[in-house]
Image 1 (spheres, helix red, strand yellow):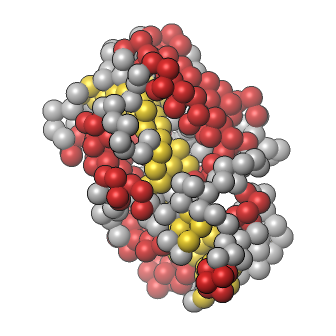
Image 2 (spheres, helix red, strand yellow):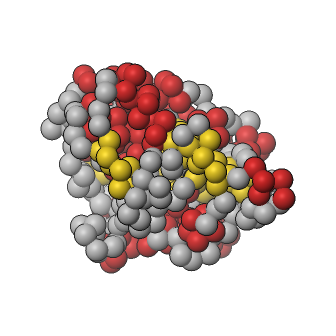
Length: 357
């Protein structure tokens, strides 16, 4: 099987390419990356060393895709990943965001149509509607927000929310952020291409992805950012809500996506399988900033964190995805524990304090 991985030199793309190659020796993997993110070029030599054909190109440029060899499947890991992208001060205009996250997807779908290839999109939890998540009834337990048990018992939570997390049935009504809108639009157009042209299309909505090799920027997820900043003793703040860091996110290692992605590719056109699933650490692999800080203090030593309850755009108290549908349909579950992910992040941060310089 020949696979094209976009954004192959980014953290998720490079980790996934290595995991796919390890999971199934003999795969022919081509990767494309525009190397626009600082430090991305560092991943190219290691990928080439395991046989990945790394190409410098931009999925927003049709000629760059036309120059690629034919593939049986495309796995789209290329995106502008920040939920603040397109807003003032983000360094990315709305037009640039749409170019990265929607126009690029359209060009890839045209590539798939031309080569009769399947298409897999790594999407995001940020396609879910912000207002009902922001107003979710929560209480603080053990230093973390959790859905109010009374609301659970009374059936007062929004449809698609349970103790297990946010399911695929949760609302995707606007607003979802400009970033979330580009990903949701990409999902829709991909599914329409699949229906119109008989292409296998798989939409995988991911929670926070984390592991060694991340550059420690906030747009790559809070776990990597917090641990790298803590290890470097740079200033940290609990921003928003009560200013105490009770916001909760779940965590997944991107290498754990590989078995499911391969199963989806092997399935081809399989209408009996769900085309859209959540893939995340879930409630078992979730943690608040406050709890993460306690872990950092034990692993890395004490560090002061200040309180700043001023609201932050698009911040939410509790975002934990329910992956029951993926588990039921594919037998998928995370393989890397939360403890192992955090230790991997800390070990990399201490061993490479200047990463990615």
